[in-house]
Length: 238
Image (cartoon, rainbow, N blue to C red; front, side, top):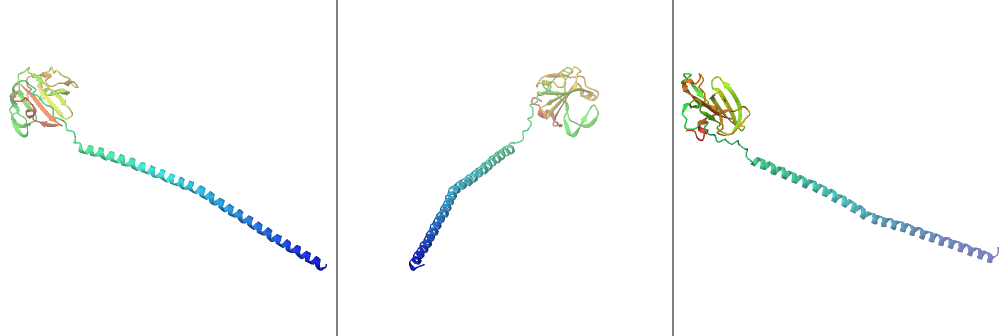
């Protein structure tokens, strides 16, 4: 190979090397741009998706907070209502049973022939001894009408050895009146409602346990099973 050909071959080599370097540079540039574009694309996606995730998270938190707030508000309202009802119940006094207005079972003035006495013994002329007495005996002629002292319901009608025929009338849940020494023709029956002043029977001859008192009516009064003095409860009693 002569010198001219050697020069030409070297020139071609130089051109080939330059072309290789150019191709490498171009390839590196394309790769860098692709990587940069991919990185940029990921960032845009991240930026695009991140606000949605944040909004969703915020919305969930707000919803949960609202639910908690509603639950707490409902609880507070319920507790306040219960406290108000409890206070009203506590402040309201217990309802007491009212005492009926009792009238005398006999018309006109009456004479007491055996007084009411539960705290000390009094003399009983029939038994000829001292004893307590949970009723009052009112003098009345045989055949005298006996009337209900107040509105009520007849609880019992029976014949008693000491009190003869007797009638018990309940006045509400607390009060009870008893009428003894009645004639056989009792005018009321058990379970019957009666009005104040209604005829329930007539006075009969006394039993042997009250003969010394003469003809009379036995009248007794109770409140919750405890004896009461009829003479203090009757509005027209003398």
